[in-house]
Image (cartoon, rainbow, N blue to C red; front, side, top):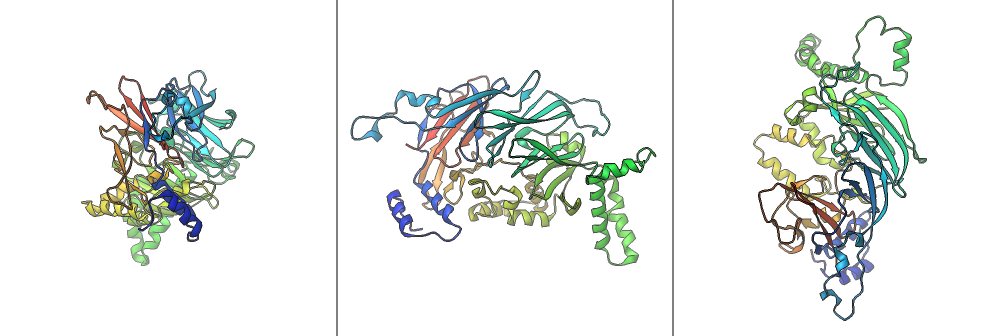
Length: 509
């Protein structure tokens, strides 16, 4: 509370005082209260690209060409210029400050898409330990594709989806993995999860979880597939016993594991043998077909051995409002091939775990220097206060739990690690801006970042769009924000229907 606001005094304090064990990073982050992106350059002269995001280590800015064919990677630099005189801070910035290449250096441009494929502009994952980028290209979606053997009826099909492993240092494509006549949810990387060197790709059409490993050599190696079979020798066992040719009908391996777990859990709920059969009829057999009809929606790693799998109906996958459909969550152990936990999306026990241990669901890599300090309600008292306020205002606790559970499984690398989103340092309107990687409706007024320690002290503002503001409020405008993970530097990008994109640069001067 009594820390000095003077940065020089803070430097002396850092020399004299040692932070508590394990708190050195948080202690250093307090310097961001003094170093903020306080200067804005409006409508920067920049190439007409789709700017995706900074990598978690801040070394690269990822962008795509407007025709969705090329990957363009930039190296962030810093504006430098000289001035004559004593009071340089009062001088206007030079004309070159309006140019994009004064802040970024293009490293290369690589064509990833071929023939009728296009880059998915919302998909990008960064393997920080190797500095590899994972990108996706695909053909157009076919909503009325014929249901081939093993495919789920009602799930659309894409003729070809290709994942590209790129070395970001020089743009060399190291390996590729293709899926044909399949469907993977590429929007915001929802169908793919990266944990350390393990990559999880969820095939919705064929209900298969593909686990791949990224080798140091730059190869994508198949580790296992979870779906029809769970163990490596399941397929061999079934084929060797001619079980398929005998005309028998089987559930998939993952579905069999799920039903077995639900059955055993229901069995153990009733200790009286005379009442157990009736209990099974009411709690299991009555809903048996509903359980059989469940399909996997989304998957994430919890650690190197456990997956969190979200199940739901086919309608929930293809509809725009999946939150309205019943959903279930299962924790699956890949090594033992067992379901170890199962919850409905209204389960208070699962919500309690999410509220107390939110960071464990994000499964940040040990190699992530900045991703481990993203604010959540399990590591920040201010974020917890916001969550508890929403919970207390909710008219129905059950509906509140369901709403919160829509964020599970979490989307990989969907939050910015920038310290300016640290709620211990700054307050801001999370309806207008947040660490989550999503477009926002543009606002007429600047977005204010207020000091957390000093009430009502404005630290800096972020204003997307033109400096004069919108001339016409009728066109629909959306904004996106790209914050550097540790520098006082950000891009605001405003797009308006049938009008050029406006890019502003916010930095510390």
